[in-house]
Image 1 (cartoon, rainbow over the protein chains, first blue to last red):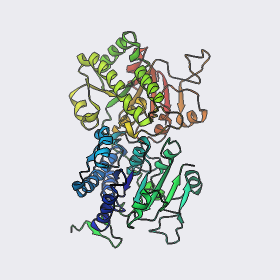
Image 2 (spheres, chains in turn orange, green):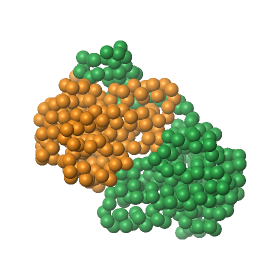
Image 3 (cartoon, rainbow over the protein chains, first blue to last red):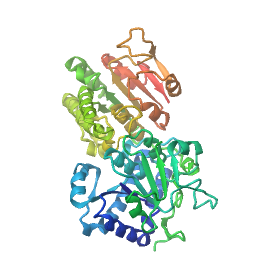
Image 4 (cartoon, chains in turn green, yellow):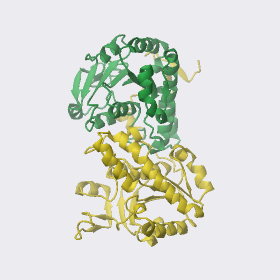
Length: 231
Length: 276
């Protein structure tokens, strides 16, 4: 299970996406991949306007879904010649067939909660977004790995884009992360919350999708980036 | 390039917005997004009708309640949700035995609640109530509720395969109480009433322990602290209500006393009120 970051990768356009698409294609003979997409800057815009207009979290969730769907469609067209389908939640019963026939599928990362998205504890932004949607697919299908592609090498003690003293954390458990109580984290907090209860998806990897070869190594089971384990 | 779109030195194409370049996981950014929300359907009431507690009882428990709902529809716009009841429990037990994950169980359970929604829909059809398929329910709800005095849906939230893994066991935590709550919260409805076959909340299961004490009113914080062994609704409601912005309370009432329904819709205290 792979999740491609929205703001971190797809919003960069060709420079980030083309090499990544090439690397996905190169790995198709070796690995079956379920590929989810993030939302990114357009979702941030929609959330900003929506919050100003008084939209409840459930409506913001619908808006976020639309943006991650646009991103999924773009990746889908770039992979069209491989015959890889884009599937919506209603088509998930066909997922095993597509994986068996075409070895990969694309879907939008947002979980299909729409108006039923639970409120966050603080603020208005839907707490379960594309990291969570992708994670839950990895959990329910018992995927071999859950790999998040972002534009940083992994988890840091602070946002490395804003704090040059941020320290890289190569490996950590959810419990240790809770103790660190970081102001900012690299994956949605609800993923960490759910990992504690997970039956099959007990570890996730966050890697830098801008560095060629990282995805290939991560798919092969090498430790790239940050590994977060349930325990 | 559109002036609103910036090719930034960080290599990402941004759209100008308050949240541009921000990590949505930064607590300070999250806190800055706190703002009042609009209520979409403040004139509607959400009523969750228990699957096991009411519908599975058949004619004896359902007919009188349907009559009370029919009467309430003369003055109120009602959004009715229902659960899967005994059939969901059965499919859960088979599914757990087969080793299926919670997401699959959640997907399976939707069919049972839908069946119950259609049975109630059939009985309420003479009053103009329509059962709406879940695929179109959320988006078309404002239209349906203008066109009909009431609508009925399977109370389950559309989590299905994306159900959260539960803390204990395999049973999906977000069932039809949670789905009805989340709908009422998002649409800013007037009241949320959970119709069960007990008078409300007790400190123990009143069906197993006749000495169980009735709790007529409680705040969510107290309820969490008391950590009761059994609740007459999905336990996840404790978390959901604690984070609610529009729904400030819910009431559990006894559907075997259908005369309580209309007072509950008027905001009268006729069962257990759980406050945020």
